[in-house]
Image (cartoon, rainbow, N blue to C red):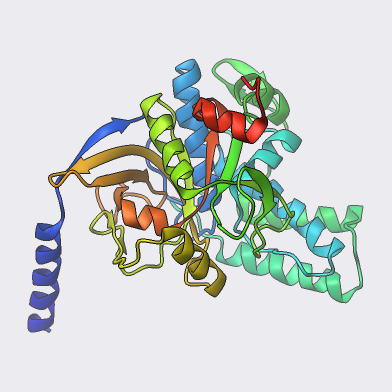
Length: 357
């Protein structure tokens, strides 16, 4: 045992010594790192963090938005789609960037202090029982041959969500003013339609909206498909102008380590577009985590690195952030979301046509 612990320590020590020294060249203001803990809700944490940074930029307003308000209503919408498609769509606790936009536009938003989704003084989220209960309920409705949620079914879903996340307040106070979810969103999250999602796959037409056909896209939403170089250009332009970027991709590679706070990958092919497509089709690249891209840096060899905020708390590393190599970004980024105002002008014209603001 002593030998094993010594070997582990030496291995970690060697890894730490081998990491490059990176200096940020661009970064944006962001809120504190949160912890999704045992909940498949990185999609909400990542998107809310993006919103919070944009609120700081646009209005100098520091807000802590409720992740579980979004997760709750998304579960209800996924249940409706699950029944409508007779169980052929995704019905789990995970989600996507535009699921957050959909909930905000349809139901509103709340601050964390009004709805934390944690009961009885719990310190961490744990959705194991919630996800199991929702899965069983959805399957039972399918066995009953239902294709829509009736009032009784909806009440049962809400009862389950109440049991594990707590009851939603009808109204709440924030900074000496009373709101409901819709009035809060209308006043403070009024830019939710200002965002664009992009992906890059060479088998689809560029500068067009295309369907990303995978299990997580339960509502069949389309995203703009652009060349990989344009995805990098978006990040560069956003960072240079004080905007941040939502990042979604694969974090299952051995080189992705929250402990060391680095994400690296071995790549021998110069054809990133080809490898990206092959990996996504084969399942070697998955959409399994969302992060908030908040900076760009360079190491001592002038190599580019991206700086991302995670939602796994700070027990992996004291900051809760990590550096991602340019190779990792090129090969393992699947989807990005960014405020339209952050797009380079030439890209706006290609996507939306001439005369676009």
